Image 1 (cartoon, rainbow, N blue to C red):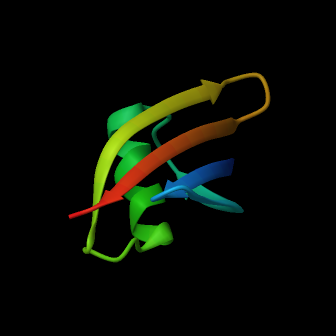
Image 2 (cartoon, rainbow, N blue to C red):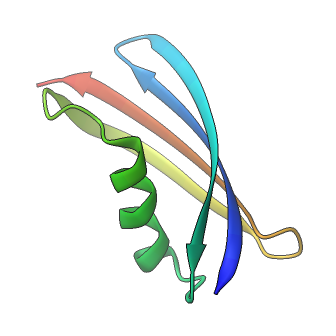
Length: 72
């Protein structure tokens, strides 16, 4: 398993926050990592994802994940 550093930038209706944490995964595929990250963030279901930007920096095992939400 690889340890991956996750840097998230979350915008909820104009209010921004940043969360940093580590996750462990056997896969470095975006389709595997996104659900793990979203589970850890546990965003309230009153928010709807409007846009996202996922970037994996393989040299450093770092994910930069930007999420923009709006109220449902």
